[in-house]
Length: 90
Image 1 (cartoon, rainbow, N blue to C red):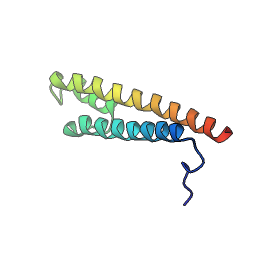
Image 2 (spheres, rainbow, N blue to C red):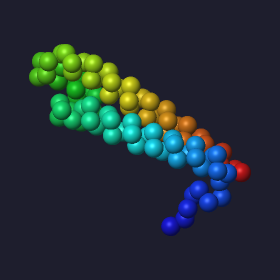
Image 3 (cartoon, rainbow, N blue to C red):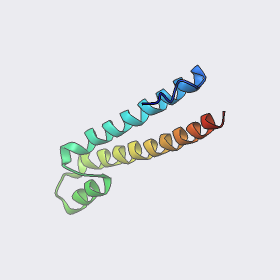
C-alpha cells in the first residue's frame, strides 16, 4: 500500500492529517447526535419532530447540531480534496 504522505512536505502532511481527523470526528459526532432518535439523517429527525414522534425539545436543537456537523464535514472534505490536488501538482 502506497504511503501518500511520503513525498509531501511535513507541514502539508500534517494539515492533511488534521483535516482527515476533523472529517472523521465530525462524522462520528453527527452519528452520536442522531443515534438516540434512531434517525438515519437530519431529514428523518426533522420528520420525526414534525410528526410528533419525538419531543421538539431538545430534538430540534439536536437536528440543528447534526446539520451543522454535516455541513462542516462537507466543507472540510472539499478543503481536503483541494489540498490533495495541490499536493499532487507539487
